[in-house]
Length: 257
Length: 375
Image 1 (cartoon, rainbow over the protein chains, first blue to last red):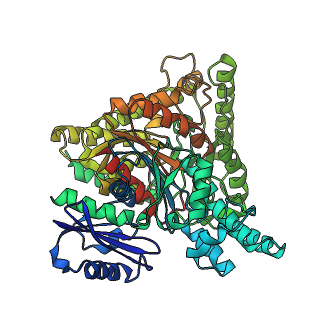
Image 2: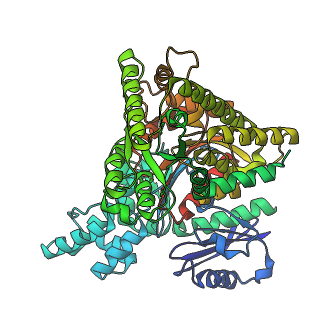
C-alpha cells in the first residue's frame, strides 16, 4: 500500500511517499508554506519523482500548521505526533526530538516503545526559531542555508541575545559596527538559537538518543552548540526537514492498513 | 421540565451577554456592584440588597488600558480596565477588588484612574488566614467593604441579612459541585457549554442561578448517562472561558472530567459555616478553611497533590494546565503540579492563554498532540 504524507509548514511544504509504511519511495520540499500553492506543488513533485500516478496512493495524511486548510487528506494530525513518527522511522531507537521549524520550536519526549510521553512548545516568539535565522541572514546578506558553514569558521562566537529577535537584530548591527568578524557574529547567532532551544529542552526529561528535526536541523552550527548546551549527542539525518511528512505518510499507513 | 438544550441555550445567552442581565437588574431598580477576581466576599454585597456582577474582563484587544499597565502583566486585570474605559460597566455603583496577587493590587489603583465613574472598594485578605489574628484581619477587611458600600450605595448592612445570604451562597456552592459531578457523567455537553454553566453564575443573583443549575442537573440526570466518545481530562488554571479555547477541546474530543479553574469549581469548594458566632466570623472562617489555590498562602503546596488526586478521582486521563499569561502565582505552581501529576501517572501539558489571544493555532496543535498522547 502506498501512502502520502504532507507537511504544510509556515515557510515550506514537504511530502513523502511510503510503500507499506516501511519503504521510502520519494520526498519533495517546496520553499512555500501556508497560504501558497506550495503544498500542491510539493504533492505534484513527489508523485513525479516516484514515477507513480496520484491515484496509486491508497491513503494520505496531512500535518503542519496548514493542515486544516488542506482539506483533501484522509487523515489529519498535529506535527508533533508526525515528527515523532517520522523520527522513529529514521532512528528507530530515538527517545527525544528537538524540532526547530520556521515559526516555533518543540521538544518531544518518547518512551522506550516510541509513545510520546511529553512535549513542550516555545512561547509565541521568533527568538530560537527558523524565523530568527531568516531575519539575521537577511541583515548579513548571507543565504540562510550557508549560516552553518560560515559559523564553522569562527574561533570566538560573538555574544548575541537569545531573548528577542528585535533586540538581537540591533545587537548584530552593533557587533558589526564594532568590527566583530562576520563569522563570529554568525556563530553568535547560531549559538543564540541553540541556547534558547536548550532552555526549552531542559524543561523536559530528555533521554538519549536525541535527534533534531525541522529546517534548522540542517544548520550544523546550531546542532553543535545545542549538543554542547545539553551535554548530549544529537543525531542528524538529511531527512530531518521531512520528518513531519514521513510521519504523516506512516500515520496514513497505520490508519488505512 | 425544560430540555437540556433549552437550559444550556439560556445559560449560554446569559454568559455571552452580561450587559443584558445588567440592564435587566438596573431596570428592576437594583444596584450593581462589580466583583473582580478572586474571592470577593459576594455574600456581603448580596446581603445588602445589591447585585454582585462578576468582572473578570473579556477577550479583546487592549488599547486604552495600556496607558495604565506595564506590558508584561495579567491581561485579565488589563481587560477589566479596558472594559471599564469602554463603558461596558456603565450603571455599576462600585467595584470590589480583592488584593490577592500583585496584578490585582495594581488593578485597584489603575481602575480608580482609568474608570473614575465607578468607585473602587478594595478587599484586603490576609496572607496568614488561619490564625486568629488572620481571621481578625479578614473580618476587618470585610468591615471596610461594608462601610464603603454603605457610603457609596446607601444600602444598609445587617447580620441577619448576611446570615441569610451565606445560606444562599452555600446552596449555590452545593449546586455547582453537583453540576461538576453531573457533567462528568455527561461528556456530550462539551467544554463550551460547560464553561457557559460556570460563567453565567457571575451575571446572575445566586438564588436564580442555583435554580437554573438544579433544573439542568435534574434534566441531565433524567436523560441517563451520556455516551459521547471523548477522552476525559482535568483542567487547572485561572480562566478557561474563551470560546475559541473551548471549541478546540470539543473539536479534539477532550471532555472536562473536573477542574481546578479559579473562575469555575475552585471558588465553590468551601462553604461558610452557618453556626458561627457572627456572620462575619463565618466569612473569616470560610476564608481560613479555603486551600489548594495559587493565590492563597500555603508553604506546603498541598494544591499539587490535591490536583493529582482530584484528577485521578474524576477519571481523567491527563491534566491540562491552562496558564494565563503573566500570572506569576500560577506559574510558580505549575512545575510542582506537573511533578505531582506525573508521579501519579497523569500526563500533563501546559497551554498559555491570554485575553488578547486571537490566534489559537499553537494551542490547537498542543491540544491535538495532547489528545494523541492520551489515546
